[in-house]
Length: 323
Image (tube, rainbow, N blue to C red; front, top):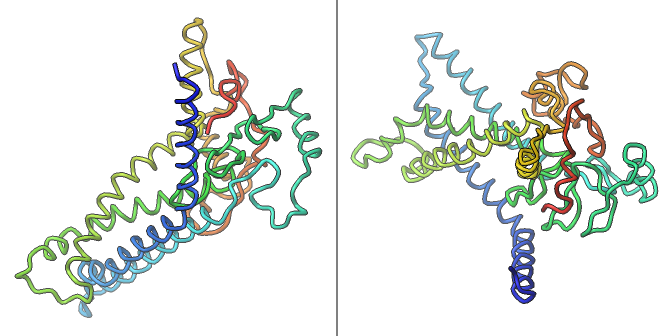
């Protein structure tokens, strides 16, 4: 058991750590932009001219050159667009929406209670910020506020990942991981050449940058690829990272009672996917918009959610104050 002194010490360390994470966010963003920019510059000055070689005698090489150039530019634009949107889009707070542009757009506390009472007899209240707590909202200890459909706080975007920017965050990871694997696939030969200092090197970018960019692509592709796959699993099962662990606890509790827990927000893999990206049948946008670097609003307001007909209990009944 924790003594009061030890408990207070742990809370103090946790508070300091959260403050450091909040303050260091801009540094992580600058670092991310610098690393991605270096890899992109290396690709266009070394990898691309090595892999896509121009030959006036063959039409196919010209077509391949321009197709590769358009594809490369498209991937770079998608990466930076979704990264920018993940950073700049508010994840969605209890008293403000992720798309609100002025304070006049924000609902008052009274209006929020009225809205929640339409769907909940006794709306929950956050024990930390003492505000009404919509379903699937959780308190972020770094930002010190409740976030709609909270997944986690990411220092690489200096922002929470929540209802209004989760889509941008996931697509940023998707395009970055795909680009890393593509970089490795077309650049491994010139990477080996960069390691041979006796071989001729006629590229503007020095050898060490090529080697570093290649190793960076491998590391990010593997590490971020795992995280990206995890988030797609959460999308297809209609969970956030917080809800996943809460649901695991609920499953164990239900199993001990001889009952079966069913995630109340899981409406089927395909519908979960459509709901998350707000595309396809019964949703606002065509499915091809997933591949376009354009702003897309999420489905719903993030405060009220569709539920399936069979569920054992709600996620928010398990834990009210998960960070």
